[in-house]
Length: 175
Image (tube, rainbow, N blue to C red; front, side):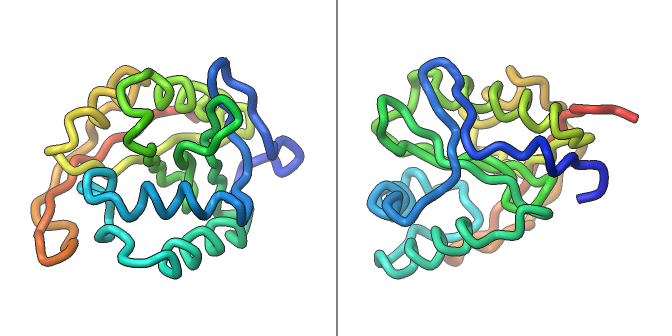
């Protein structure tokens, strides 16, 4: 992405109780546990992963993603992978967290670290597309300073269910 400083790309970010680090193949068990959970995937753009091969393909794509267009991390807590956060396609932001770690403030810590890191890389903004029923994610993004830029109906068809979107943006390096 134009304007990003490649010299400032990091593989590991220490952030209080969490660490953001690049994905590795051994993250498969956590990725599958989270991405096969209907509660975690309720507001994701795809249905829960039906088998470990689907999760393996997803993880391998995350690992192999072009660093020019993707800047994605695994969230680690107490040495264990607990989720994913970052930009699968800059500046599009997304995250998921294993349900055992919901409600502890860990996603907020990880997001604050990611925002600081991406600001330092020169990314102008982050964008998010959130299902309006996902109140917890909307609160997290609002606390981080994201503002609503629009709404749309019927934007995603996931497992036969038509979902809506709230679009949000966070200015990192306004021009």
